[in-house]
Image (cartoon, rainbow, N blue to C red; front, side, top):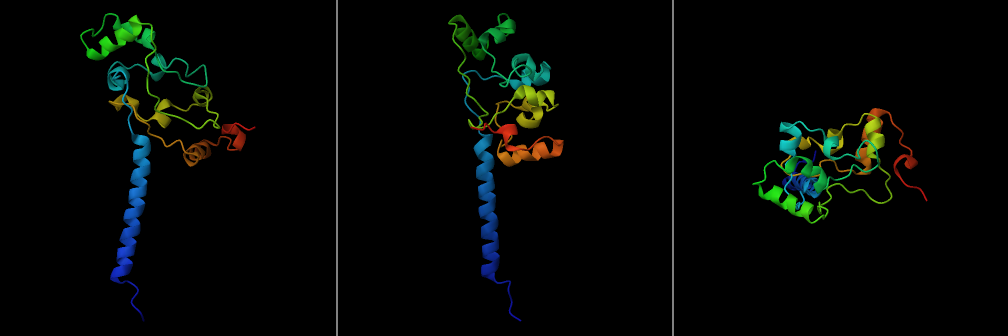
Length: 172
């Protein structure tokens, strides 16, 4: 009987293992990147320590398809008088004084052919943390979920929600 476990077989096995590991790491890193934001917003302080729910700042989450990104007017409700010595709050004040929108860098992006509604998902009991991760412990916001179709389908399957194409895809 011929010996099938040879050094070249072991080398091929470990080579394949390393290649798959590298591909996984590359894919994971691809959507784990952080974006440099114009103001270093501290989700840990606001969400965890001050116990503000996501919808306090992302006010359109329960009303519209898009969650919305807060602008300086919202932040200034508190920061007219709080932590004025902070460089980040001084940057905020500059946007507010000049009536300029804060040019936040978008973290999550879906293809144009996908129809996604924060409102609809919230109405079905999907919590922010399920897609966005535990933001209250993030010093810098980053994408947690891949948002690839298989990821979405797995969630739909586990919840027993519709999986037909028109549920998520804009059809011509």
